[in-house]
Image (cartoon, rainbow, N blue to C red; front, side, top):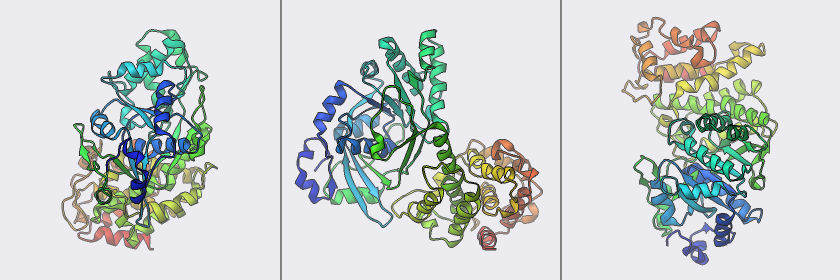
Length: 508
């Protein structure tokens, strides 16, 4: 069997293979969407197909919507040609459960897929339609730039076409995992708009009753296609599931494998109405609550744990996050980091329980054996992350008058990262350090430090720990600098010193 529209009619065969099918009339959805589109989405990768398109399918299936999504790709056109076209815009969504099970479902909420390089006129036609309510984005943080011809340049042209057609209202909704993401779109669009020398257009963009740029918080892990999932689908007799590597080096398949937990919180600012995504579990709220939810996740409940696991996982020889969750010392590190050090100063958004969020992370998400996420990937760009993931908690302790002596996991995480930068693991083997814009500069500051010689340390950390651009504050102005320094020097004791330091300090 192949995943295409004609094969969807063979319901018995899909049922035999335990693959759930869409409950809505797919052909009717396609017709209605093309005639009066309500939702365009930019970015056709895994997070869109495995999460956003699945949300649309939920409201199509329960009758809360009769219109789907038009997907637009501005960067990697091979995804459209090699993944969307052969499969009639369908996606096989595979949920990887913590108990080792897999649930398969065909997602059929995408009515049309557009390559903007060859179909720009069609996209302009869509943006000129009064029915369009929102354009959403999963183009990664790197997509919000002001280079000519990039996604934001194209989006600005589309908005200009909408303005010229009647200045119809619209919401521009970033669903990318970055803080204040709506402002990222707005600043880029306004910069490109200024080049058009049309004051009316700029005024329209700045009128939130006409064009809104809501903030959002998104959380769902959709890793690269897993071999175990490919094999499962092959055993079911479903063809065309082998992954490809595009010319842009994207590793992608007709299926998306993802964890079960998922969160999407969006500022409820939609001047032309919106799809009933609240019926699919999306939380619509005010901007302040979105910001608090994002802060809860990135400073306490998920991201700090991930970063600590990443650096220690690399040092201790792990290739998978789920395998690290069998390591008692690492589990103790992240539990202390979240429950003991983070929760006392967590920003509670009121719509999600921070403790329950950590419970789910520790008990279900991180141990999931089918989530092929690697510490080496998560360790990427750590210098850009530690300020938010650890510095904000430190500042909260200081502002609240709390003793920094209570912090053990945070200085251990920072010391572990600095030891990781020496590019030698705990067995003394050379280790590749993941990409980071500050890697060369930081490693230069650590020059002279030898992984198995504590006497080689001569205060090299101090120029790093004083850098508020990295940590959000000058750590040398706090007692934490000496503690980090002590942990770091202890980890220079040769083979096994990282393990010994971690075990001793986290169990003290």
